[in-house]
Amino acid sequence: MTLDRYCEELAFRARKAGRFLANSPPGAKNAFLARLADGLNSTQSRIMEANGQDVAAADENGLSSAQIDRLRLTPDRIRTMADGVRQVMGLPEPIGRVLSSTVQPSGLRIDKISVPLGVILFIYESRPNVTVDAAALAVKSGNAIILRGGKEAVHSNQALARIVSESLAAAGIDPDAVQLVDTPDRAAVDHLLHQEKYIDLAIPRGGYELITRVVREARMPVMKHFQGICHVYVEASADQGIARDIVVNAKCSRPGVCNAAECMLVDEAIADEFLPKVAGALTDRGVELCGCPQTCKIVPSAKPASDEDFATEYLALVMNVRVVSSIEEAIGHIARYGTGHSEAIITKSLAAARRFTSVVDAAAVFVNASTRFHDGFEFGLGAEIGISTDKFHARGPCGLNELTSYKYVVYGDGQTRG
Image (tube, rainbow, N blue to C red; front, side):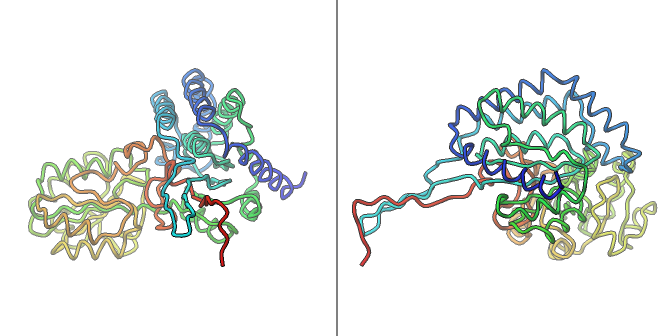
């Protein structure tokens, strides 16, 4: 079978399975999720063995330390995956909800009903745990999904997809509702992006080049999980101990993820006192600092930062630092370099917090908390298929509700229009 024919057949089977899945009872979908969670916990050794093959090939595949961290599965991470599946199972059924209902002067009752999007093409890199997150969210929301993972996680994704398929069949759901693309040929992505007849939405989750390629080639709508150049602004009134802890957590807890802070902005009123403290805490954890001229004066070990540095998503233990004269300058810096992902202010001033949250344009804005909380699990969504930096049709963590659309159902008793 030719590659284009293979991709068309994959999309056709997803469309066919999706029609039945859209009308599956909640019990069947939850039975799948229960079996999936149990399967993840009972086959840890199988998953770890497959993941070990991918980690062993990481250097050969040119992965950075941050990418290897995203790739690696541990027993704790597998248990967290299973917990996320169970949390999705416990969430309210998203399909068939009456979002609104009105009765018009004509006597027609018009109900707005939540429905699945249809078929989703999900393209992602490095992180095999999202294979499970995506499958759980798609099935619970009544959507068929085609999974295209990166070659660096091929063995992990195959092991996880096998558990998904077994769980679907056991729950009486067509396994074609969740399909993993089984060819490493990069051209398969382009072929799938041209299957607008069968695929309703493309979601790319990965690096800048992947996302721009998908946006350029897709013939269906795209929901982007784009760059995360996230900032923490330490305002003049901030509790400096709290600020230090938040900055260290936002940068160091997992530097290779999209909600990690890439830049710290510090009010000049406290810069001389605060910067040496936080710089020491960061450098003790291996963070390389790049700063504006004023930062470099206060912290001599910091390297000079360029405009290009401030526009870089490092996903590593590197952090930019800039001293700002006011909250307005901090807001201006974020407007110039931010990517609309996650922004935080550390402050005791209610007025400053209100100004920051009302003006800063991002999917999530935090007050006195780490940007690392911008996550579907932490937001109570159970899991996420990505964090959208778009404004349409979804923004922020994309869980169940973000994978639905709606239709109008109109009830009458013989009305005709004149």
